[in-house]
Amino acid sequence: MKLRIKGNSVRFRLTRTEVASVAAHGFIECRTDFGEGHQSLVYALTAGPMKDIQACFSDGRLQISVPRGMLEQWAASDEVGLYGKPAPKEDALSIAIEKDFRCLDRSLAEDDEWDAYPHPSSQGRKE
Picture 1 (tube, one colour):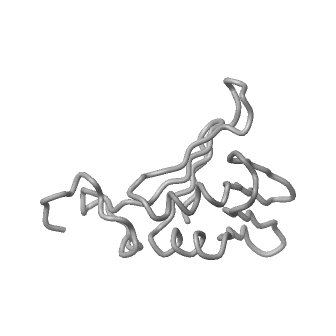
Picture 2 (cartoon, rainbow, N blue to C red; picture 1 turned 90 degrees about the vertical axis):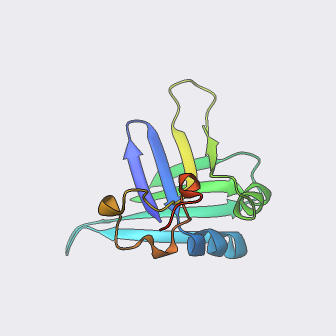
């Protein structure tokens, strides 16, 4: 699972295996360690009984929670992502949970793209 934070927005990008895992088990978690004696950043995606997408950050842990039905429906569909703002304010945190696509430009591709979704714009192109 990739994490992108920019301004007041958070985006998780998940591979096919990660989408299937969170849909089946309701939980996926990753950790970034900052070296011996330093804290780790943990980021997690969970499914639950809530009605809307929620975000929580505490003690170095970022957790995004999504209604279980919404998550399962997304995982089984061609929909690219789930989007939400946990507060109705205009400047509230913006959340995106998206399927990770392969790069169209192979020179920019990352080594871990083997499990990414085929890019929608690559229809009819050889990969």
